[in-house]
Structure formats: C-alpha cells, structure tokens
Image (cartoon, rainbow over all chains, first blue to last red; front, side, top):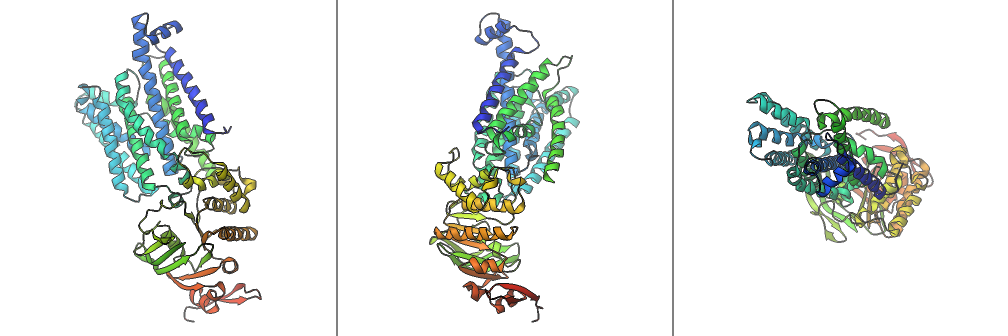
Length: 332
Length: 256
C-alpha cells in the first residue's frame, strides 16, 4: 500500500495514535468504568478517580507518546544521515551515554535529592558525548568515521555503567540502577513531562529540519553537497537533535531499545522510502508502538510488572533479525 | 561560464592536478579525456570545490568562488559523479525530483514548472517507461540514465558529468551524448569526462587531454586526438577509418 502523500500516512498514524492513547486511559490495574474515567479527566467526582486518571495514567501515556515519538524521529533521521537501514540512536552512542549519566546520578545518591537530577544528568551526558563524537569525527566526517566513533563512545559508556554497577556501594543502589536500566514508564508524573518535554521539543525541531537534506543524501555526499546541502550542518543537526530528543527520553524512561530502529521501517513503504517524508510518520509510529507496548505491560497479568524496555527488546530483537535476513536477500 | 586558473590539487601526498588552467564557455561541450589516474575526476571535483585546491582559483561567471563551500551555487552548478549508489529504493521520478532541491525551500511542493522539467528530463534520457519503478530495481545502465536525468533537472548553467556512458549500451551512449549536446543548445556549459575517444571526438566542441595531472592538449578534437598525443599519453597505436574514428591497434612500449 502506497499512500499518495505524506499527509495520508500522517493522518492515518495520528488517528491510530489518538485511539491508542484513549484506549490506554481506560486500561490499567484499577478497573475504572468509562464514566469514572471521564469524571477523572474533567476533575469531578470521586477524588481517587481524578488521581488515577490525571496523576497516574495521563502522564504515563503522554510520556510514552513523547519518548516513542523522539525515538522514532531520531531513528529515522539517523538512518537517513548514515544511509543505513540498520542504524538507530544507539549507533552514535547517545542512548548509552544518557544511560551512563542517569546511572552516575543514582550511584552517587544525587538522584534521591530531587526528581530533576536524573534527567539533568542524562541529558548533560548525552550532549557531552555528542560533543566528543563531533570532535572525534572531525570536520569532514565520513559515515564510517561517525559510526566507528559512535561505537567507541557507546562501548565506553557501557563499560563505565558496568563499572558503576560493579563498584556499587550497596545492594539498594545496584537494584535501582538495574531497574532503571531496564526502562519503564511506571510511576512517572507531570514533573517528568515538564523536565523532558522542552528537550524533546528542541531535538524534534532540529531533526525535522533535516527533511530537505536527507533525500538529497540518498545520492551520496558529493551529489548532495552540489544540490545545496550543507553536509556539516546536517550532521550537527542530526547528532544534537538526537542528543536532545533521545537524551530527554532516556532521562525519564530509562533505556528503551529497538523503537528507534523499528519505527522507521514500519512506515517507510507508506512514504515511498523518501527519508525526508519519513520523519514525521516515523515519530508517530514510534509513539504508537511505545503507547501500545506500555498498554501491554499494564494488561499482562502477573505479580511483577514487566519492564517496558524488556518488552520492546523482546519484540524488537526478532524484528531486527528478520530485517537482516530481508536486507541480505534484497541487497544480493 | 566556469573556469580554473593555475589550480593544483593533491590527494594525500599525491599531486592529482598540477597547475591546470581551463575554461568552459556557455553553450560549449568540453570533453575531458586521458588515461586512468590522469586527474580528470579531481579536476571536476576541484571546480565544484569538493576537494580544496592547493593554489590557483576557480571562477564562475567571472567571480572568484575558490573559497565558497561546495553547497553554495547549487542552482548554477550541477554534477553527475562517477559510479553513484542510491541509498533507498526511491522511484526514478522522485529521484529526478531531487534535481529541483536547490530551487525549493524545505516544505515547498513541486510546482508545475518543476514537474514539466522532470518530465522533460525523463524523456530525453529515455527513462519515462520506468519513471515509477524503484531505482534499486533498475539495471546499472538504466539507473545511470536516471541519475543523469537528475543532474539535467537542476537546469544549471554549468553541468559537470563524470563518465555518463560507462555502463550504457551503444544506443543509450548516443542518446546520452545527444542529451548533453541538447543542454548546450540552451546555453549550458557542459564538461564531460569520457573514456570513449570516438564519442568524445564526435560530440564535443573541444577536448582537453589530461596526463599525470596536467592538460597536455586543449583544442579541437581532431587536433587533440592526434597519433602523437595518443602514443605519448595512452601508449597506444591506432588505426583510423574514413570518418576519423579511431580503433585501438596495439600497445606501445614505454621506451618507444
């Protein structure tokens, strides 16, 4: 199915996302009736309903859409920049660096002082890592250099995270670190929405502004440059856009993998594989995926709630394998 | 239209272009010929500022553009690089539409004029029949023609083309050269790197013969492709038919 325009894909995905978010309002541990949810939304009636709907479900759903959207958008932009369908935000090391920042905050006990500490550490580390990446890759970075530098930064961040866990002063902080690394949207409030929101919005704008350059880059860097594309600016826009958007996301939800990889692939055929037109639909698809996965987390019965990052990895990894087999076949 | 004055380009420690001066005028079709590694591609890339020059200057319409970054002057300079890969399975039509990127802002849709230019580019490269197929499913020669259409669709005053006929069948080698010739009729300055000396001789207004980074002959095709030049630069002996076309006859030893 090829929709005639990006508008078609955008409209379809927006409606699906709206439906999923509304459905998520009605699903949860506390069985609320339709009437109770509406009462809770408008802030009338039973105070418990108001609390459950406005302070538990609503921020969780919004964060799911925001984090998923950021991952989907950053994934699409990075795949377009690197001209590689197997790339995602973790390739340039932004996710693991943000994760390291959060782990440092938890490890040194700063996290307990205020809810804003973990997000601020995560975003700061993500941006610092991207500054190092840009410096490492140099002025005329080739795609290969960028990927290699990203892998190096990613490995270093992962090693330091392991070191923090290894040296953990007590089992409680180790437990906190591990649970945080698994990725979750449980027990988040509007505080997180307000902390991460501005970063994700800024990152989103930077990433959406690559829409003109990415299609031209399909022709390679020389041809793109002669089409008026400032390659250096596109690289910086994508890298720092991803740092803000994904850093902001990881800051409030922990490590949630595979959404950034999978979302662009799901919608690419809908926009005729154009990497510029892909951006917005991919963001919507990422948001949709994460809202759906979070519904799954909440409705799957069991004593222990599954962590969202575990669910996305369990669904994402097989998809990734299928993707490798599929690309191997078409590239032959 | 575009020219270089005494430029030198080095790739690493290797001097790829040495003290070259060349000019391509409006409406002129200039062919660049020479053996592998003679510096033809480096010269084109230097004109586009894709590689920095060590010395000398690049002139566009009489203005010095040596220090302008490559993304400047996108409406004036179009480029068909050698051996391009296409990253995504875009349709041929959408790929050719990329030629209109310099003329549109980010969120602007294609105008009627853009569409007419794209249709024309499809037509003159004989690619209309696969306009709506993904370019990744086309053969190498078909894809090459689509990519040429992309470069033509820029409608720039200067068109630099690097080996457009390399993977083409004989029929489409002719249509490609005719498309370039056609562009010059509209006033475009066209520079083209070619390996086929007969195509070069038949279609180009002027030829530049390159050897070890230098232009060793610049002039009418008949004069440039003389027996002595071919022997010295290509180390080949040729036979000529009554139309002036050359056929490679034998390899000459370095000593001769």
